[in-house]
Length: 261
Length: 335
Image (cartoon, rainbow over all chains, first blue to last red; front, side, top):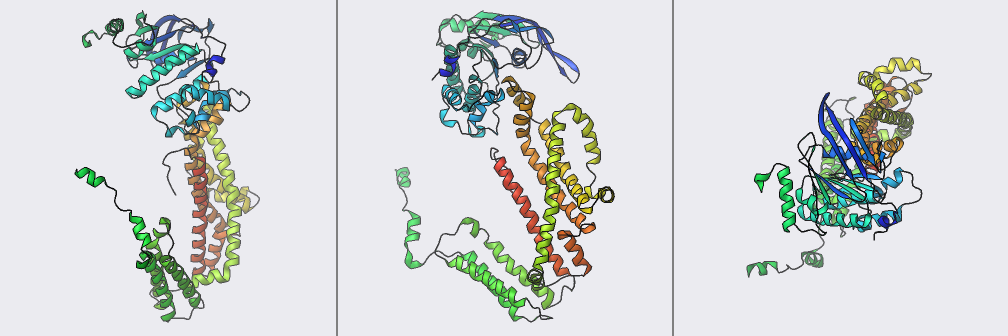
């Protein structure tokens, strides 16, 4: 079942983010979205980046993925500077963004095809689909999938490439509550078997606390680290344990929401 | 209690209908009426004398009678009739009424004067007596249209992809396309006829120009409208620019490309007919021109009907190709 992941001898990569600042040019006017952010991630670690919507967390992920270069500061993976996109660091967006003209199978094979990996990728695709429980939908078209199924396919499209760093940009943000819970559990299992490093951007405090080993809290735009905490709870976690509730209170306070408790 | 009573399955209705052989098989009433109208039209054509005796009156009536009998037979037949057939009943009934009105207003009474309004018998006579020349004209038009359209669509597509993809090409080509593109291709006729060695090559160029412009515009807008997320995903997975064009930009732009191909096809018909009327000595446009010279209006109507069948058939063909290529799309427009 997990052959795709276990076959990778590589472990998760470490991440170095040092004094990174970045601005968008909106109609010629620079809008600062990231302000002097520094933190590191250990190999195989699961870190959640938590903050209000539109605070610049997603931009930070794009920078780590190498889709954009930062205005200031340095980004590295395994102590090597990030200069462009690389299939060892893969992004999953809030929208599954499957290519609508390709079947699920063809979507999942996209990375292998793009890099010119020889051979038909049938077995690898089947294994990746099995990983996310989508075996029987290999020949379906994206518009025939539900939101949860499409996001599973998007995960399979990434996992087939055996990434060492998984960058998740609010991946469950558009799913209904039940589907979200199921997929959160499955992501946790994939991470536990897959040994890849995971950076999860979310604005859901509970999601961060259920999944991550460490939570980094960002303030409003421009994104700046406000608070950071280790989540010293064993998996699987439960929302109603006293420690969970304490951590949630601390994080909400850091976000300026004490009154909402 | 009531809910349970309501839930009891009703006796199977279809079996009851199919099983009652004694009450006869179901009749397609609309079809029967249409069939009788066709037979009536045949009788009308035969019975009422015309101003002049037209040689094909008998043939027209015979055709109407045959059509009427076939429809009536279908209406009475004990087989299952597909919905696509039964849906046409009103059209099948309207056609013979239209033919009778046409016949009545032309040769039977002379309300509509000759030579401009020939009777249906006279149009039919064109098909029986001049079919070889019409067929030649269809072939002539296709021989001119197809290479021009394929050339124009090909160039337009390539140019559109280049404009949509490359900033440099966009910078130089887009203003030219915007400035020159709206000129109707036929406006180039005087220049094309002296620039090219033959009227045929000039016409091919004009047809290519007419079809290429909308294809280029819609392809480029399709390519530049592709969501950035698609490129991000592919780049992230290790795609090079070549892959991004071939496997992301072009497939994502195809719905827009087909709109351009459709508009280009329509534009190419207009240029084809004008080119044939102005210089090329073949094709349906030339046939129209020639028939007008002889005031042979029956030939003109006959050629127009052939042209309508040909052009709508070509558009239908394009839509078949599109439905096949864009099968992944939901709810696409039908032709």
